[in-house]
Amino acid sequence: MTFRQFAFNNVTRSKRTYAAFFFSSVFSVMIFFMYAMFIYHPDVEQDIENGAIRAAAVKGLLAAEYIIYLFSFFFLLYAVSAFLKKRQKEFAILFIHGMSHGQRNKLIIWENLIVGCFAMLCGIGLGMVLAKLFFLFAAYLLDTEPLPFYLPWRAILLTTAAFAALFLLITLLTLLSLGKQRPIDLLKGSKQPKSEPKASVWLSLLAAVLIGLGYTAAILAEGVMVPALLLPVSFVVSVGTYFLFTQLSVYTIRALKRNRRLYWHKTNMITFSDLAFRIKDNARMFFLVSIVSTVAFCAVGTLAAYASSIRETALAGEPFAFSYTAKRGQPLVEQNLQTIEQTLTDHNLPFTKHTLTIKVRGNEANRGDTGWVKLSDYNAFAQATGHETITLAADEAVELTYDALPSVQDKTIAVNGRTLRVERQALNLVSRMLVANEVYLVADQVYEQIAPTREYLSVGYAVENWEESLAAARQLTEAISSAKTEEDYFSARVFAYHSMRQMANTMLFVGLFVGLLFFVVSGSFLYFRLYTDLESDKQQYSAIAKIGLSEQELAKIVTTQVALLFFLPIVVAIIHSAVAFVSLQHMLELVFVSSIVKPTAFVLGCFLLVQIVYFLLIRSRYLHHVKSAIR
Image (cartoon, rainbow, N blue to C red; front, side, top):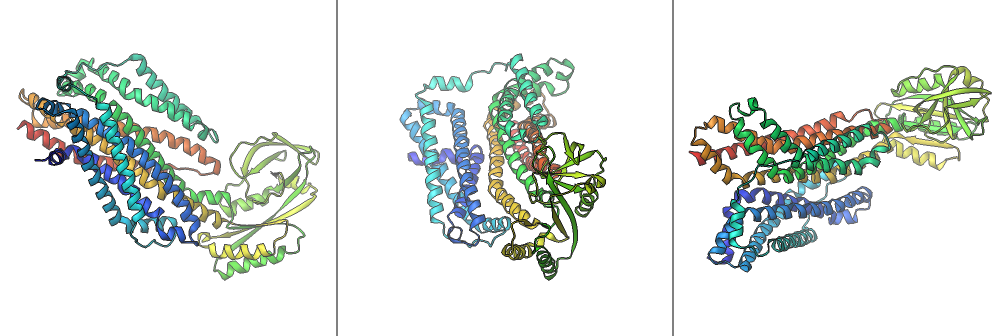
């Protein structure tokens, strides 16, 4: 048997342990390769008609390529280092039988090359097979024509070179970390008895305080404070999560063990005795899985929430499907209105027309030009667009704004020698045109007494199937722009809707697979840790079975421990994500998005469902192996 055959046998005989690491590597290579196929596609580089949206997608995919590569580096480095640590006893025996440190290094290099080459071959092969589906999916999301299949030499070369360099670099780093260890030290390291895990009361308390502070800041933050607090809150919660797994969880288990009634109940003694060791041993892995899963949940959930809120955001931004505002007295106003109505009729878009007048005059307190809108006109617009109507007292005014940001203006305003209270804001439904510095809504009797310096006519057209009005909107924009005066303004809601939809779908296209990659790798971490402990678990359960442990009790203990391994970090990640979504909701309220509960709950529910299926599959196989060992 040659040295290469020895290395190959080492990999194939440890296929159960290598499985998760291998498939995660394949998945990383496949996603990286498919993104590269899209970036280097000849039609994407040359297609002028669809260049804008595809160019935006290419920029996002390039950023995603860097993220995938960086993430793969840390994942592979952790996995390879953990593999080698678990093989200390094996290396010690090989050293005793005459293997030199140079031969050990050569063995590790060959093993990593074998795994790396197969991962690249399988990843690129799967990417080629799934390329057509990927292009169809991209076309659906980006609302463009599907890209034809092509032979992606540049993508193959980039992926091969990038991951070959990655596997080589990781191999060199792990070899440098191993050094020259003596066989006796390696044997001691694998057999040294573990002392009972201990936890610091103060660090446990610090974990609770940090997570509590982070949660409180995230939940209480509103508006523009949400993005400002993103990084500090993430840092505080991450540190708190690390101490949660390394200190607080161990401290909690030790506290539970002091409860004799609970500790001595049925098989709890065996479960609790092993629990603290497992949590302490896997604390860093739990921390990594929690953070990686939180990032995956938040990325996919945020994209889903944004995509689902597009229609609501478009409705808030453009109350009417088509709006036209012009200064009264302009000669082309009537002609433009006739053009709008005739075009809507020609495109079979039934409409209802609503009009109001905005009075503008210089404010008495020298605050610049101010617009005034009559309450009854505004409420008619609100009813036509599905917004809440407003009631006003005679001495009160409401500031009309385009978002929910708090106003920095004074709480009073003067008009016609009267001072009106301004304690509320409402969405500006009357015009997106800047007819004045500020626009206020006042009671009808106040409005009638205002003597304007100029007036603007605001016309809104409500159209039921406005999502299908893109062709009409383009025709109208061209027609009205050719006859545009300096003081008129035409807008169509479908433009903003179409633009936001393309942007959201582009972000979803870029981020969805990255989020899935994070989730798959998180599952690989769990699988890897479970199966690296399998041999010691077999010995432990075999010994316990000899003193009377039944198969039902064994199944209960194993289920509890595997469930803890699978769901503890995921539950923490879901809680972190839920708090992040509450904070996101506060930010989206600025654009009058009412709720993101449904899309985020759907995303978290899907991830949890996949995790439950994964747990049931792994638990079944793991229990089968343990039972086989004790029979």
